[in-house]
Picture 1 (cartoon, rainbow, N blue to C red):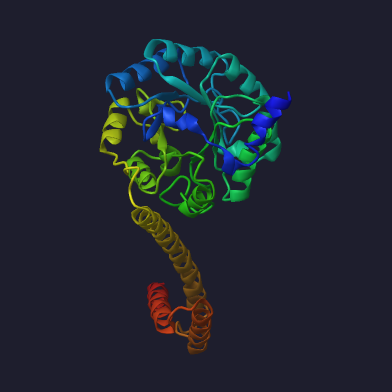
Picture 2 (cartoon, helix red, strand yellow):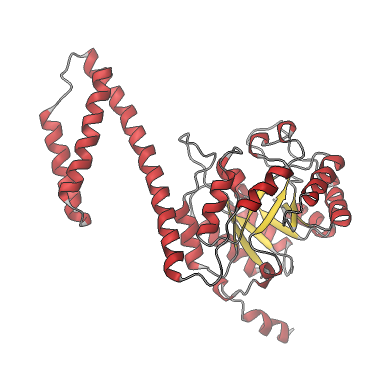
Length: 366
């Protein structure tokens, strides 16, 4: 017992973990398979076709239990699907992976010898749920991956891993699947790269996988998101793959066929391990700039919608569109903020002038 305690003490913090499990797999590590297990035939055909493409996919995934937003939707086939995962492993040699959301799921998945388990975004957000799962997993040597919580909370994400570590689970990894937002965007879940990269900077020893399927919510953006993640040093991607995506029982629009998956993987470019730190940092900064640019556009779009409402009020009340006093307040505030942030006041004035001119044009159209 004392020797065991000494052995575990070297893993007292997340920074101390070695996570050598990921080195057993090729880079990028691709985890692929259907969003949901639907039938034995569907699972085996999907696995067979992935195998026949000769794409380097070592891990086959499938959702056995599916947390849904509303009741009465398809919530997974349950334990029977674990037998189908077993057959996929036996017949095609894949390692297998599935999501667990409570202690009962963990017990069933461990009994079925599923190779890799992950905790979903809806579970990560709840410390009670994570603690229950962690205690059920106590001491397992199987890799356990943790998806980011649905809300943009880095502390919750880290906390989930710490709870697992507290139960002597030392083969860990994370999955970046994007964050929920009330505003509708081109993404199902906005990437918010800054949070993921903050995690990566803090814990470079913990493998990070991107989930472009849940970030995009469609098939068209998968390759771009996967490549962007590899550009900033992610270890791989989890991509939902189905024998016939259009007939999938869940998340049909974001799944692709095995053949499309193979093409996507073949087109991915992986950074060499000896690439200079400067180039690596440059890639990260550019990714963050792209993310911030996207956010700027979304905020500007929201601002213009408010300008439309103001334009309607001015029209109804017969008020002139241009209000000199209002413009004076805006320019003074912009100059003040420029001084506070160390930015050029001339630059800030140009930006706000362009925004103001567009706002006037919007109101004129009203």
